Image (cartoon, rainbow, N blue to C red; front, side):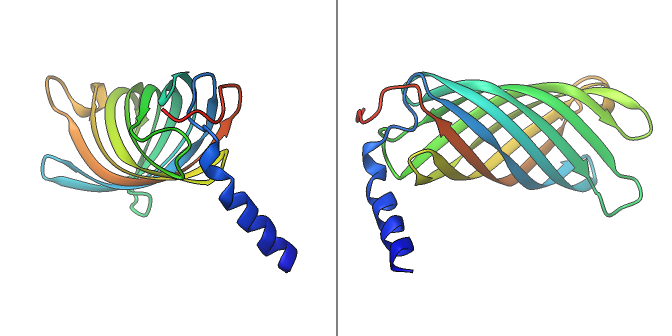
Length: 183
């Protein structure tokens, strides 16, 4: 037990000198979410799973792709599923090497939603929240997000469904960039 405790203390004390979000690094992970959607007078409860991968092309600034899979009202007979692919950009606001950092994320996705038939959808999402680095290469993330959905499924014109929700995610940061710099 003493060895496990000592290893945990050493791991926690070495975090500050490691640049998880430096140019040249990769991040791979994803999130799971819960949301409440309002579309006209209708309200929906949604669950989502979103694996993603990104590359830091600048310190603190990454771009990549994620795959969003949503299930709307899964406990109700008339549920629907949505699958989109979404390019994203992400920025971390605090210096590299911090145990807790704040990020903002923006993405635009396109795909299809199936209820009785399959129809096209598009979405844009913005999110922000803290990333808590549990080790030099693993972060637990919490984000508040806003999404707006449109496309054939939602009707013509400017008819869109708007969602506010919470996501919990996990990212693994893979090396390749410079380590130890504080910017």
